[in-house]
Image 1 (cartoon, helix red, strand yellow):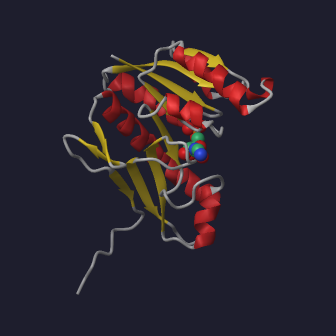
Image 2: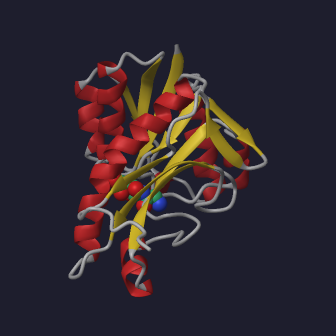
Length: 219
Ligand code: GAR
């Protein structure tokens, strides 16, 4: 039974999706704790209501990033994690922190990486005029929003889309893809070779959420 520790900074809807899937599908794992850097993160209430240990390491109480990361690491390690899941955890992590969880920390980022790392990804996508947008679950490495890609979801950008409408449609995809990727990890199905992740036995490592039938290629 693998221990999963989930870090959130706010709403925690991806965390909720993982908690629900873990229970409904009887994974060989359990969500041991949900931790936040913000005392007002609304997702903490959901976790507590579901009997999951919660904790807050308030980044405002620490003079620097290294101090916060050391405290967060202690809070996480108290739950003996096999996997740390970043689910809307809006903090840049020190290389030491990332190294400590190398190979056992996942993140979800709302873009088709390597395009649009950082913040405001939906606005970045609209300004670039891309025709597909999406989200990526990846292993965390010291470089921000980088790291071996486990699963991607893509949707088509519609005329009139706004950052808000893209975020809303994409969130539905995130709630499917993140539990799937976490489940693969707890089932020991992920292999990383030369920076490329494969799931064994193989299944598609992508989702498509198209609003119209694919046009296909015709000759
Ligand atoms: C999600 O859209 C996630 O992809 C994004 O924050 C949202 C959190 O929502 N993450 C990032 O932007 C990380 N750089 P949630 O709290 O409802 O899961």
